[in-house]
Length: 209
Image 1 (tube, one colour):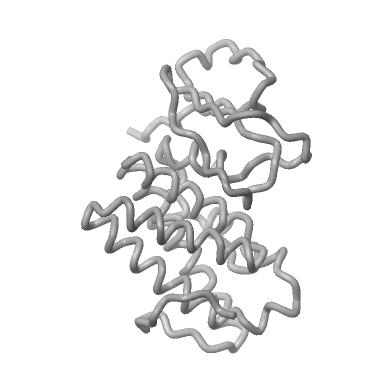
Image 2 (cartoon, rainbow, N blue to C red):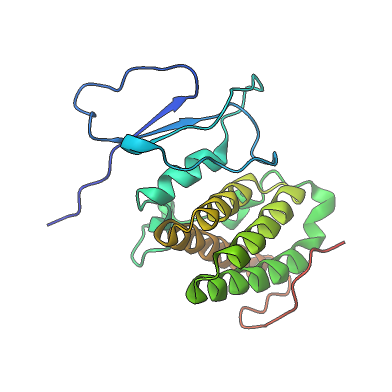
C-alpha cells in the first residue's frame, strides 16, 4: 500500500490562524516573514508538534529555512533524492542557481568542488554522531550558498545546522539527502554547460575568494 503523505500546516508566526478542520493531527510550523540568511537558525520543535520561531519581521519574505526544517522533520525533504522520482520533481541545477548574478557563474566549478568537500564532511560527521562538527560544517555550507545567491541551498543547510544543534539525527539525515541531491543536480548542469566537473574528486574545503 502507498505510504500516506504527511499533513503539514504552515502559517505565519504571530498570526494564530486556526488549523483547518480535518487537519488537527497535522504538524504545525510557524514561519518567519524574513530572509533566510540572518544569523538565527530555525527554532526547535515545541510541545504538541508546533514549531515557533520568535518575533515576526515585516520584510515580506517567508523564511525558507523554517519551511525546509519542517519538511525535513516530516520526512519529505529527502524525496527529491529517492530513486524513480519523476523528472519534473527532481532538483534542477538551473533553478538552484537562478538568482546567482552572471558575474559569479564562472566560479561555479569551484563552488561545486567546495560544496562536494563540505557535503562529504557533513556525511562523515553524521555517521560519527559528531553533531557539533555537523553544525559547523552546515553553517559553512549555509554561508557559502547565501554568498552565491542560492537561497534553497542555504535554507536546507540551515535546516541541517538546526537539526544538528538539537541532535536530531533523522532530520539531519533528511536535510543532508537534499544537499547531496542538489550537489548532483549542479554537477549535471556543469557537465551540460561544458564546464569541468569531477564527481569523484576529493578536495580541501574552504570558500572561494
